[in-house]
Each structure stands twice: as structure tokens, then as C-alpha cells.
Image 1 (cartoon, one colour):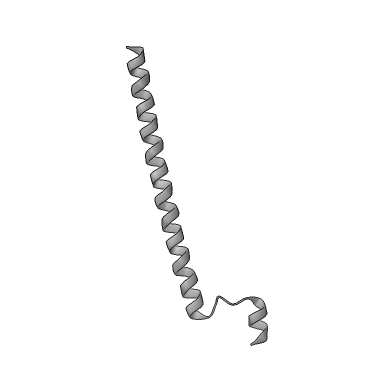
Image 2 (cartoon, one colour):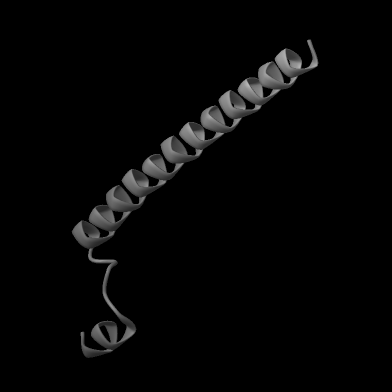
Length: 57
């Protein structure tokens, strides 16, 4: 009986960790996408220049 409870607890903990990992991966992918969009917007608007490039203008 105790072994079965231990196995159930371990199974639930593993599932919880898996769900947390999936959520973290989704969040990371979302951040990467947002970052790419931001960089593209900055490049399009001309804001992606270095301070050296700004001084030359």
C-alpha cells in the first residue's frame, strides 16, 4: 500500500514538473518572438543604431 502511494506521489510530482517545464519553454519562446519583433521595429524605425552611428549623423 505504501509503495503504491509513493509511486502515485512520484507520478504526480513528475507530471507537475513536466507541466512547469512546458510552461517555461512556452514563456521563453514567447519572449524570443517578442524580442525579434522589437528588434525588427527598432531597425525599421532607425533606432537600432549604436551611439557611434548617431554621432556621425
